[in-house]
Image (cartoon, rainbow, N blue to C red; front, side, top):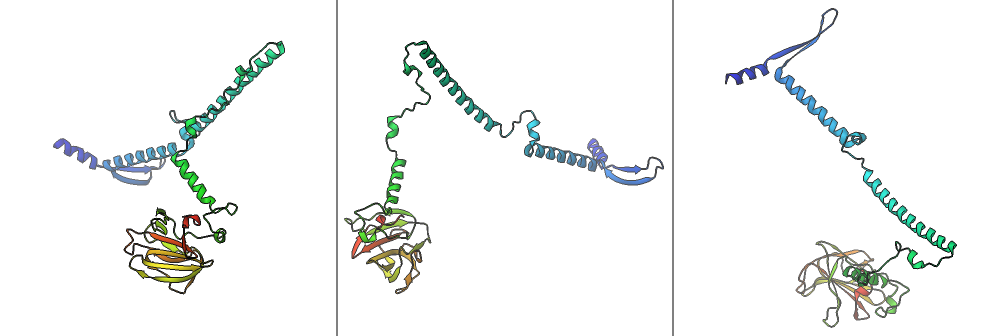
Length: 285
């Protein structure tokens, strides 16, 4: 216990540091510090120096001169040199084959040119690679869907009057139930995030904006060319009967209203001259 007390007393002991003029011994400045304060300041200074040194090594080019560190671009250069070396070796091998062939020709010797065929550039195709994968099928389907809007292509699914009409997608989302006349599903069910805006597919006039027991909040737009579009199961209707809207105008908010709805989605229908048509033949969702 006495030893511990003497150590504490030693650390608490204060020392006076005086700065004197060498010739006149005049006191220029002085300060008084305890041994503990001196030790603390020395450790702080060492820690600061170590931190600055680490930062210099980590974030400056100085680290390249320290053994064990490699330049950041060294890996890239090695890969480039490796590829270049492989290319040069292949070129040298090809030239050697050509020289041997020319030598045989000059000597008048018979030779089999298939021996000197450049097998390096020969491409072999695995028959299994020609089978379309699921990703290829999805990509092909997306291209075919985009081709529906090509004005140069002819499609029997589109009425002649509607082939050059540019429809606006009322909602971007995932189609969960498609158009099927046999099951009396005359439209598309599209799922999207909550509170997503429903937009008009074409310019027109609102002819229906009300609530029905089966389809909930429903809105319908009369367009040109005897076209009518229906937007069902909304949570909010933003347009009234008689209002004129443009393509892309927000007319409602996605919802889950009506007895026929089992979750938040949009049921979208297109009717042409009194007959339901498949919206996917005209709109890319």
